[in-house]
Image 1 (tube, rainbow, N blue to C red):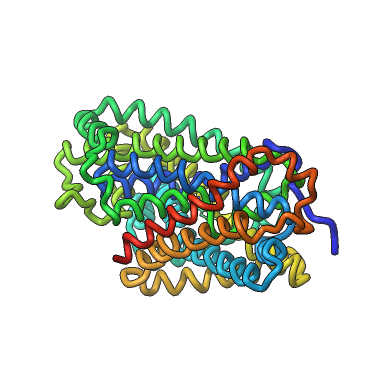
Image 2 (tube, protein in one colour; image 1 turned 90 degrees about the vertical axis):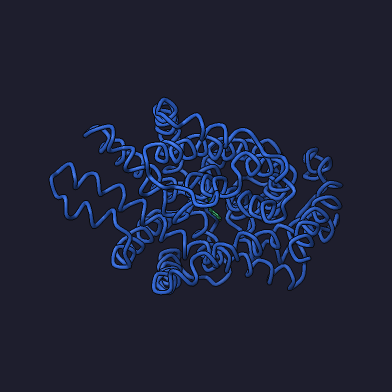
Length: 439
Ligand code: PFF
């Protein structure tokens, strides 16, 4: 077998992994979830779950990939030395396809909303209007465009494609968001939104539904439970002490989610202040679609400069979505290349075709299945996968396992510190959350 491609540096890994983590989950899903679940209460539970569960799950996932230096299916099979691992890996791979099936649709919305203000600036108002209005035709145009963009990067490989693009594009997003937050917070009504977002209503923090949503959001946001981080971990030189790397990725990802909340939630209240109906019974109208009407209206209030702001904002969101898409696509691609000996190019097109078929099914049955797929992935498949990773690292990983030599174990001070936590506490925590939902 040909030697594996890899990241060239630790920074390359951090940026690519942060590129995977930071995406629509942070900027689109997190503020929507928070706004629907009491703002501050959701933020509070989200932070607790991120520290107690998502961070160790990310550690476990990257650790397995890094030790095995193989794609997730092969890595889990080797770590468990049984078919159970293989099935766990395949479940993650299906999760990656599931994620891509709806994610590429939403990413397509970002692309069309980026182009709309450009057409408006050029005077093509009808096209601008079409691009800004939800329709199946628009989905059928932009979803495949987005899938092709991702495929174009993936087929260039790890260092020339994934590493190069993630490193360049992520810092721009941060600057843009901070500038927008400064603007929004000066608008009338913004302070009310800020209060709702930052002051938790502690009577809500024990609500099971809220906890499960926050847990799903945290796993989704850190890209865990579908093998995306495992495959990136496998592209990093074996045996690094990954504790610090994982902590940096978590910090970056959580900071961007918090910033997105600081932007979107006050923006919703600014729109409400201006007379637009945004909430009914504390629930967002139109749920996920809302930011696509609220934000452009706010941008328009800035005049023609606002059109450029709108373009830049949605273009950067498309880019953030792209760096997330490629990590998920890499899961099945790496499996086909390494375990089935299929050339990278062909594997990329095969996976893209499967994703397009799955997203077409969603587009055609949007009302019925879009929300269900997201919920199934984030609140069932991802948490179960994480439980599996904890069990693999905590219980099934044998000391004599050929993956882990003695020297590597010694180098992993953080793993030794974490091992009891991962072995006992994490599986119990996830099981308790599931139990509370079921009963
Ligand atoms: N973490 C990404 C986001 O927040 O948008 C979504 C994601 C990417 C989930 C990659 C899973 C994955 F493998």
